[in-house]
Amino acid sequence: MYCMTVGHDVKGCNDAAVHAYGVTLEALARLNHVFDQSLKSEVGISQTWFEALLRIERSGGQMTMGELAGQVALTSGGVTRLVDRLVERKFVERRACPEDRRVHYVAITDDGRATLQRALDVHLSDLRREFVEQMSDDELSTVVSVMDRLRSSDG
Image (cartoon, rainbow, N blue to C red; front, side, top):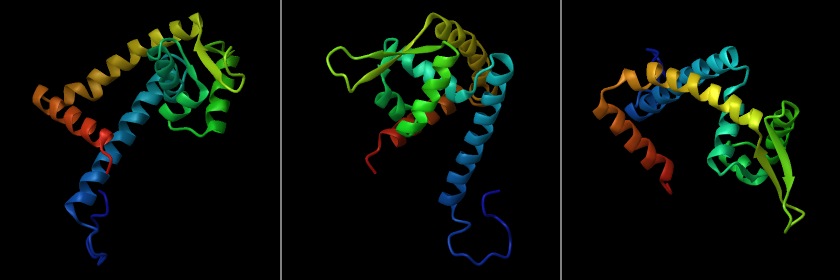
């Protein structure tokens, strides 16, 4: 458990807010581990690669390197290394912007789309089993509502 050891005198350690956040982090860590292992064993890609391919496809098949960095929470150097590896596997290609030489796009390829489709099949099965089926419809709706509010908060 998250900081629940008896005998600690640190004020706030057993606060319900600390516990709730800790449980959320632990649940997400477990789910991310399960999903990452499944994608690696079934499709041969990591969850990070899956997320990048998904974001690019959802953005009309291409996006700027900066947009991708922001959406997958990587530094510009981190996204450059990620894209380098995706290009090496022929899942994406780099494209120059004709209007601005400083801007570079990353575009999904046919091989990337085929890999994404296989990954989505695996991921959706995992999501249903490990996430959706663990809650009632009302609980799932509440989780989505709360997480969307937290994601959108200016706080």
